Structures are given as C-alpha cells and as structure tokens.
Image (cartoon, rainbow, N blue to C red; front, side, top):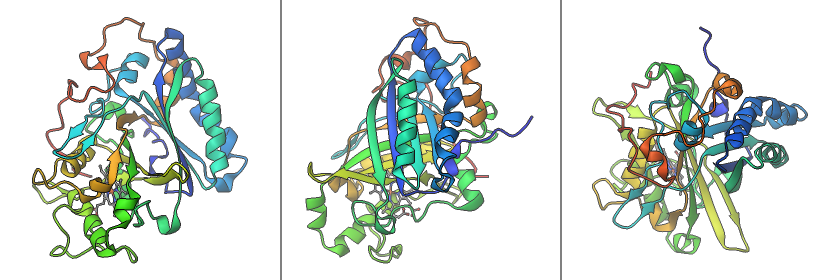
Length: 346
Ligand code: HEM
C-alpha cells in the first residue's frame, strides 16, 4: 500500500496566515457539499498558489468530532473528540463550536485571502464561518507579548514524529490532530511588569530568546509548564504555528494558538498544566494577562482521505450518532478516554 500523503502540517511559519472555523448548517445536501469541497481543496489551492509560486501557499483542513459523524460512515479517528474545556481556580479554557477548520499560510496575505474566499464561497449554504483570524508575522517572530514565539518547535525528523499519526491508528496514519485557541491579551497589565518579571513568566530572555537556567525559571513559567516529559524521561513535543493578530483601534491584541500533534492528549496535558497548574493552583503566569476566548480540536486527514471524501456515503440526517454529539461545547461527555500512554515519538 502506498504511504499516505500528509497535508501541509509540517510547512514552516510564514509572514501571513488566515484561520477559519466553520460550523455545518445541518442539511443532507450540505454534507454532500462539504464532502465535495474537501475533495477539491487541493485543486483550489493549486489554482490560487500556482500563479505566485514564491508565495508558497499552503492549506490544511481539519474536521471536528461532530462533523466527522455527520460527514463520514467510517469510524472516528481513535483520538478525535470535542475540545475538552479546562477550568482552573482562576482561569478557564472554554470549548467553542467548530466543525471544519482551515489553516492558510503564505508569504503574502493576498494568497491566503483569495483561497479563503474560494473555500467559503463553495461552502455557502452548507457551512458558516464562526471565527476568522488574520495573523501576521511580527518582528523576529515575536508574539504580542514581545517574546520570540516558536523557538523550541521540533525540527527535521522529530517534527514529523511529533505530529503525524503512525502505527497507533493505521487507518488514519499520516493524519494529525490540531488544537486551536484564540487568546486576547491585557497589554496594559503586561507592559506594567518589568522585563525581568516578564522573562520569569515566559521562562526565556526577552531580547536574546535564551531559556532561563532551571534554578531561575519559576515552576509557573510558560516554558516549565509546557515541557512534557513522561515517566521514561522522554520529552513529547508538539508543533506550534502561533500568530499575532489584532485591531489597534479596538484595543484588541491577540495570539492565535495553534498546535499540531499526533496525540491531542499531549496538548491537553499542557493545557491542564497551564490552567490548573502543576501543582494545582500554580497556574501559568501568562494567563494573568491572556484570556482564552475559543477552544477547538480537529482531525487533519491525509491528502488521500480528502481526495476520496466526495465518494463517501452520507450519514442520513437523524441517524443516531454517538451521545457526545449533542452539544459542540460539551467538554467532558466524550466517550473517548484519554490515551493511556503517550506515543513513543518514533
Ligand atoms: C513556548 C508564547 C500558548 C505550548 C512558548 C514561548 C513563547 C510562547 C514566547 C517560548 C519560545 C518557544 O519555544 O516558542 C505563547 C503565547 C501563548 C501561548 C503568547 C498564548 C497566549 C500556548 C499554549 C500551549 C503552548 C496554549 C499548549 C497548549 C508551548 C510549548 C512551548 C511554548 C510546548 C515550548 C516549551 C519548550 O519546550 O521550551 N510559548 N504560548 N503555548 N509554548 Fe506557548
């Protein structure tokens, strides 16, 4: 059997990105429209991107748990479930609606925008945009908090090993999972901190982006809480493609968090550490200046599965689907258990 081709989840960070989250409108025709579009995504990307090859336009499409049950007869990918909200003593990561997700990246915004238009036109009457964020690259790949963001992303073979599903779910090998969260920052509060206090919150120096020594880095620093090491001493990475966004006049300053992983349980562990704290109560200091306003989880099929989507049998409306599909924002009603063990990263 030929190796399935992953979507462009491994593509590098670019100067521009658009993140689109859609919900399905609900009709049987709509499901067929969505499946037809999924099969055409590759062709539409080529139609837009081929004209400006140096723009390196990429498009990744994700499918939410409820939408999967509506669109496909095949069983859900093993670890696909609705985003699970996380509630700590002070901070909350909400789960918000999302059936389809599109991550567009290019060196130029016009390419992302043009493809976003094509995709959304094709979904008219079948799915509606419920969240749209246009992200831009800031100086030195800095986020809205002024720190370089993305440094510790895995590179080379480790990048693929971190994000692509392998033998643990053979039917969906080459696929991935993606978690997104939109954060809004209190920049006035953040900027009232000294640079030294900000560095302790992140766990790295601000100007030179060097990790603080272990005996200096606090237990509630962002880097400490997001370093996931299992009982065998193996570190588990994810690939992040965060982008800043905002509207100056509205006082909106944000970070769009997007993390890819072969096991969404790794990202869920990071969120638990950030929001609940490790130990509980010792939450991530950046949350005192960053509010999560969305939270979604999607499966990212291979190109082969997307291409075949139009041929899949529709699930008739009214057909019984798993019980957790009654509400998009349900957080703990998924029948799927968290993975017993983290992947071996091989
Ligand atoms: C590291 C910013 C949310 C996971 C970092 C770094 C910065 C940063 C500046 C240090 C440099 C780097 O290695 O990239 C932010 C901001 C966020 C955010 C501004 C939103 C307000 C998240 C979330 C997660 C996460 C929600 C996971 C659920 C990580 C990981 C690292 C990291 C895994 C690397 C840790 C290491 O191995 O050193 N983040 N982040 N981040 N962040 Fe975030």
